[in-house]
Image (cartoon, rainbow, N blue to C red; front, side, top):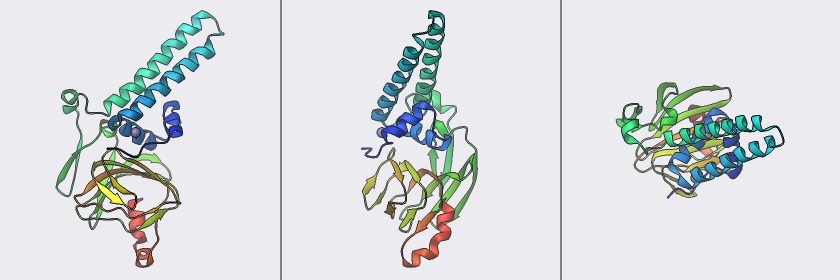
Length: 227
Ligand SMILES: [Zn+2]
């Protein structure tokens, strides 16, 4: 069961269109796997639509009509995006599916990522990383694959790090994560993720990871690699 969700304010920012594309894609993918957050987004979107309607109700009736239509359109767009990221219609999705392969395992990407440009895959040991080219300056977005039995040395974060687990499982000091888990960490957190059977994550970070323990400090190039 998914245990880690975006915060309420992040969902609010998502509905308001205030998130960078990388984080908005992360929230949309999570909502595609999490009926609870999908429901919250629908409610928030309805509230935005209602607020727009109330704001405009003081104006003349003609503009009301137009605003209503705009609000409905936005709503449909957002719901469309959410459902597009889900596997609700496998028949439709089949023709436009996009998959990536890491270490011999093929993964179908969520539809949200379908049209994003992927850089070349780089590898260090059991880690493989393909950049998602979003051109957001210091915010870097990656597909990160950790092969079976792989781990990332204990580290902390100078900025934030979002990990959305897309496939497989991994565990750290907080427990085990399943696909859909939306894990937002910052410099207060320190963790050492490891995977038994391998996993694929969507990651967004705005600074290199910082390794914290003894010899791990020598591994800081991995931090840059992952970032
Ligand atoms: Zn959720």
